Image (cartoon, rainbow, N blue to C red; front, side):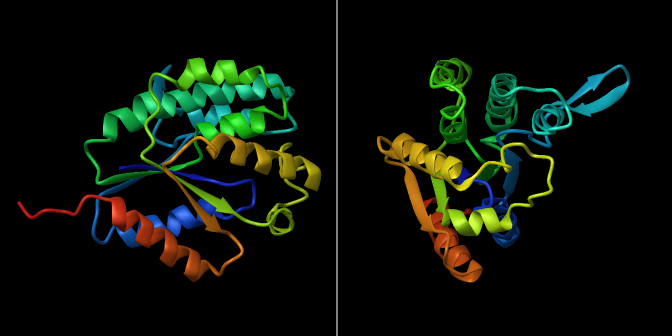
Length: 212
């Protein structure tokens, strides 16, 4: 069961994944990965192990490095494809569930703010390989998200204003409008309530562990 968590920056999805994974691991074999910067995507290059996708994300979102918005989205498409092709595909039958931080929905929602033509690139990168049994969208009010985002961070995306994130949120809803396997969660609820709701939704879908 491949579950991909979504939400705008500051929605709380990353910390939610960490809590849910910790809880589920008492009963199930769980793998946690990231659509953009999977820590499991490691290559051997010149006698060194390099987390190539994590490196791509790091340089893409460091505003001290001269990467423009088009280049950033293209690099994220590469990282996204590698996560699906190498990490998810190679592990989907080895784990009870794979929990992934972000998905192709982020490609679309954030890419729309750069160029609508980028959707063609994302389609080429992912249409033949992406696996997602369930999207979980954490819909947190934008003002709460912006309060959580550090104004002094190096991430150029997080430096955008309220209107930017409102458009990104609208693009998410447009993306999900034709998708059935999406579960929406009110991100303004307490952490314990969100955890309870999300865990129950996953348990309703994850295959039970059978004794050998």
